[in-house]
Amino acid sequence: MDPYLAFALRLVIATLLGGLIGLQRELSGKPAGLRTNLLICLGAALVTQISLALPTALVAGDPARIAAQIVSGIGFLGAGTIMRSRHAVHGLTSAATIWVVAAVGLAVGAGFERQAALGTALILIALTVLGSVEKRLLGQETVTMILAFTDSAPDPQQLLARGRVRRRVLRSQWTSSPGGVSRLEVSWRGAAADIATVREVAARTPGLSVVSWEIEE
Image (cartoon, rainbow, N blue to C red):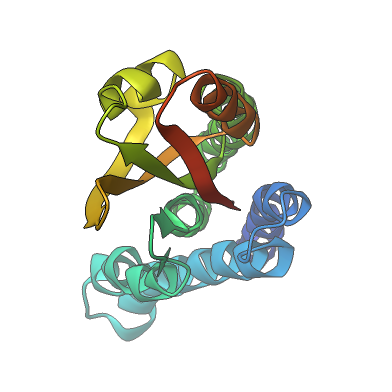
C-alpha cells in the first residue's frame, strides 16, 4: 500500500475508534466527551506515525522517544478531569479513559489496527456493561447523611448494617452536642433509594433521627 495512503487510513481509523469511545462518554454526560476523546486518539496516532517516520527521513533519531511522551504527557490532561469534593473523588474513570484512548491512538499509529479495534471494544464493554453492573450493585451516587443520636440510641454501626450501607461507607465523623445528643455525619457509595431505607430504620429506632442528607453524582 502507498505509504501516504496508509498514513491517512490510520488517521481515519484512529478518528473512528476515538469517536466511538467519545460518543459513549458524551451520552453518559461526562466532561471528556466526543471531541475530546476523538482528538486525543487522532493526535496520538499522528504523533506516533511521525515519530516512526522521522528516523527514516532524518537518518537519525529514536522512533520511540516521541511516542513515549504520549504515555506520560497525557496524564496532565487526565489530571484536569479529576475533582475532589468534600466527600469523594470524581473523574477517575474519565481520566483513565483519556489515558487508554491515547494508547489506542498509539497502537493505530504504530500499525496495530486490529489490536486497537479489539482494545476499543474492550473499553466500551468496561464503560457500558460493567458500568451498568456497578450501578445496579453499588449505585453511582455519594450519599451523605447526618444522624442525631441520644444516649439511649443503639450502636450506629448496627443501624448502618440494617440499612445495608455499612460496607460501602466512605467516611464518618462524630460530633458531640450539649444535652446528651451526638451527631454522626456518614457518607457512602450507593443510590438515592438508600436514603429511604435508612430513614425507615431510623423511624423505628428510639432516640435516633435523620437531620439532613444530600446526594452527589
